[in-house]
Length: 79
Image 1 (tube, rainbow, N blue to C red):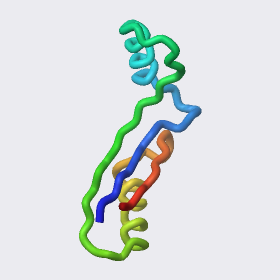
Image 2: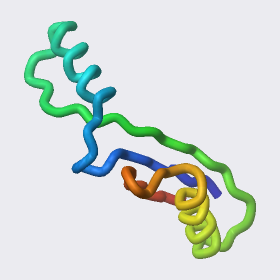
Image 3: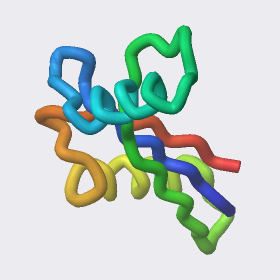
């Protein structure tokens, strides 16, 4: 079983790296780019077949290590 976890900053949190990317894209001639928000993606391979347990484990991983839930949101997708 494979999972993808996407972690992004909450909307109320300033994103200086996203702002730098936004300016760099403009400087490279990419017009019409609005706000850029950066994040991170984790691709995780899991053993086992219990999807409910996998989802619970992945959420626990996010809460304990992969995401700072004070300033970040995360989403979990299992394939």
